[in-house]
Length: 463
Ligand SMILES: *Cc1c(COP(=O)(O)O)cnc(C)c1O
Figure 1 (cartoon, helix red, strand yellow):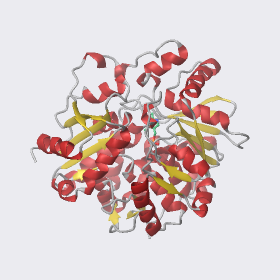
Figure 2: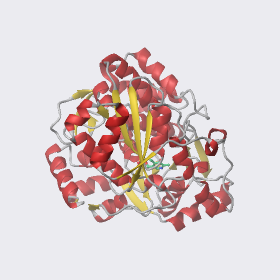
Figure 3: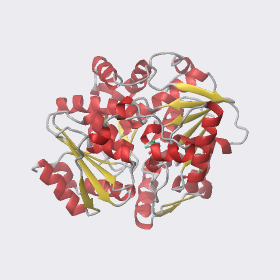
Figure 4: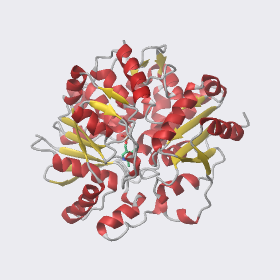
């Protein structure tokens, strides 16, 4: 048992190495990869994360997973390149906002959302692994708004890779859409899907399930079903906790459950965490799952925090796998039931295990607006609507001991309309977003039809 061999949550895929997991995304049995055993950090090793460069912290974490797939030099070079274009030298600065509360700012990368932190390193590792393996790869990503631009920023222009990004038509902010559709790279292909994010995500899963097609185009996923993203995101839990020097409660604006599961990963690697708080918008499948014990998916509806307009939280499968003591047979059956019924009653023992570390709150648009206003009044800072959902959830926490860290997942300038509704004025446009509205857009609008999307991908690839 080691931490650089990976198994599937559904138990019917052969064990795989790091590079294989990186390049595949989803396990061939439809499950998600997790390490056979979590690496362990001692108290001294955890304390030593204090004050070191983020790049060094990333090396200490990722090197536990990479095994023979990358040499130390390769990994260090990939990390250096990944974090060379961030606006903040600390990469993930921790900012105190008063009363033992902190914002962990994760939006200083090229596309101004936390997705850059993992996708930049994933892109660097991906092109190195692909160069070693040979051949081409086709990435198809479903995005609720931020993964798409972060994937394009990380993979646009790289050799031997094509990137297809599917966003739900009309359900991302103008800034988010333009960040994707104005890419000048020939290997970037944007699809505006006539449907929701959940429709886009299920089309990606169906493309994988079409194994002949998936093989022919070397299909891969860079959504948070790719374990490498989880590993890269666990780093900032470790650095933030070391900076604070005592166990914290982390409040995480949640959609697909990737970012908060990275917190569970840090905990499983030995980090003491007080609680992990799931903050959802009114697309509250995860809050209902935890509070009512039934994981049931409805239709996603638009909110002011579009990157969390999700009703199927893919990474929850990983948390379920851990919460049932890694009973892959149960997970496979439960996920099949859920796919059929859109509903899963969580067994008592599994629910108790989840509740031992997670709490959950759902916050609507009114609470989102109120939180943006309150933080501006208290601190002069402008926060984005996703961070605001986290702040509103933090307000509902009663009497937790220790510091409360709210993950600040996006820059407010990505969501000027929501900010203007709260504060009366859109936030200033940072240099990275200036001039976006004058660039030409490239995007194909397609219905939510698997054959049509498959044909579109084939025709673009000439495959
Ligand atoms: C993706 C995203 C989230 C949700 O993260 P998950 O890993 O999907 O739970 C929250 N906020 C922003 C700004 C995002 O882009």
